[in-house]
Structures are given as C-alpha cells and as structure tokens.
Image 1 (cartoon, rainbow, N blue to C red):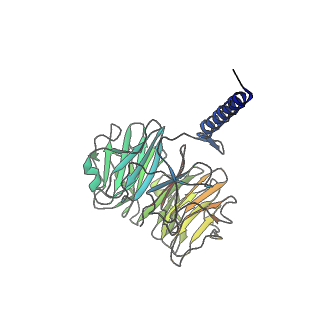
Image 2 (image 1 turned 120 degrees about the vertical axis):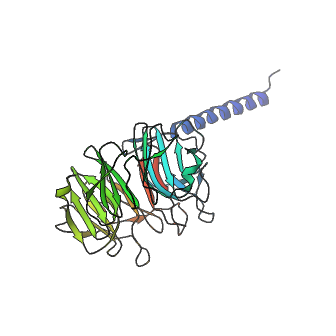
Image 3 (image 1 turned 30 degrees about the vertical axis):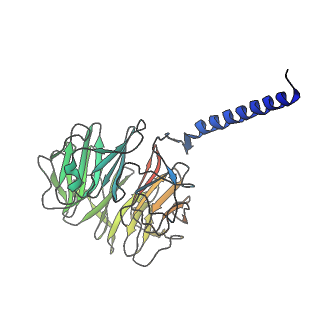
Length: 340
C-alpha cells in the first residue's frame, strides 16, 4: 500500500532529479562562452583554479575576459618556459625554451609534444604557421621548417646565419624575421631568406593600417614592406616589443615604460597609469580583443578598456609571477610564464 510517507519520498526524489538535470544542462551550456563576439571553445584539458600559494603553472587561461583564470598546462613539463603562442584553425601551438613544441586541439585531453626529441635542444623564440607548414625561429640554429604539421623538421635551404632570430610577422605576402642583424624576408614561407633592411637588433613586429612596425634596440621603425621605405618614429630607448590595439601603436620600452601613438610617432603618450612594478621593469606583451586590452607584466596581467589610459591588475593569478607570453585565441586568453 502506498502511504503518504512514500508519496513524500517519491516527490522529494523527483524534485532532486529535476534539479540535477537543470545543473547538468547549465554546466553544458557554460562549456562555451561568448567573449565579445569570439566563441571560446570547450576544452577537455583539465583546468584547476589558480592558487597563489602553489608553484605557478606554465600556462593559464581565461574564458571570461580575465575575470577568472585556470591552469591550462596539462601535458607540458612543469619546468618549461613559454616563448610563443600561435593558433591555426582549431590547433593551438606553444613553443618553449629547450622543451620543444606542444599542440592542443579540442579533441584532446591534454597538450601533446610535437615533432622529434631534437627540438628539445633548441631555444625557440618564435613560430609562424601557414596551413600544414610550420616555421620556427631559434636563438642559435636559424630557421627550421616543417612541411607536414610538425612531424619532421629541416633547416631552411637558405638560412639566416650567425644571428639570433627574435620575431616573425606575416605581411605583404611575405614572412619577415627580426634578428640581431636587422630584418630578413622570405618569399616562400621560410624556405629561403635574404637580408631586407638594417643591421640593428629587431625584437618584435606589429601591423596596423597596412603598415609594419618594428621594435628595435634603438626605438621604433615603420614601413610598408619595401626596404627603402623604413623610417624611425621613436629614438632613445630600446624596446622589448611592440603591439597595437587597433587604434594605437604601443611601444614597450625598457627606459620609458609603456608608450603609445596614433600618429606614427609625431606624438607619444604615456600608457603606464595603473601599472605598478619595480624600476627598470617593462611590459612583456600586449594583446587586444575589441576594446579590451591585456598586458603581460613582470608581476601579473593587467586589463584596460580605454586604449591604455588606465590599467587594472587582474586577480586570480599567482602572486609575483612574471608573464611574458600572451595571446587571444578561440580557446580564451592564453598567458604563459617564461621567466621563473
């Protein structure tokens, strides 16, 4: 016989199952988050909320514009330091110093090492990708190229010799390399190289409004891709890197901290307000998505929504940790540690 007590327990069980179903539905819906128009793909990589007391992870990820962060490094050695992050279609690549290259796709449960163990012997500074072709720039071995997605590698047929490779940029139908001996160019995506311009150290590139900007040991250059067209728009300080937010060019100087210009150097504005760190520290990396700008600093990551006029340090990351690689991807904001 069904008693009122039994009916009561049946109702409680039904309500519990219903609530559990709602929680599971909401959890599945939360796997994809819309970030100012860019879909952040669901990840099977195990992520854990960061704990400032714990040893910092190699990589952190945010899928909500920096509000929360999680470790995103499963499969990468804990002692690795990142030197580059690049997305190509659904694949995400990271390069390291002396630990090789790792790749992640949305059908994996963790990062996978890419290519032979010999890559672990290389100090890799930068990576560029075009379809199934990967190109890396190294500190001591010049340029290496893979034609099969990173499984096998060979040195460039006509390589950049006796110079450290610092940065790549694809622009004007060419691949440009920043080196300790000026700018080099390749018309065949890294197979052959020729000297393009200058002899100064080039540490980074950015492109905006059909122009290429280069960070140098002396300041900033701007050009249109022609060797005779480069000109200096900032002198006096060495730059660590250079970037843009779609409107301003940002010079990550070592002597004058973070500067910005919207008129090709006719005037420069200080963009340091809110960023606090010891004297002689500098901005390591700067990326943007829409009006949201993120900068990787020697102590944490900062966020600006007004073209760098003001910055606020983001919470949820390990204290006193230097972040030097940063990228906006379909998997979220990816930040890497390369200095310990």
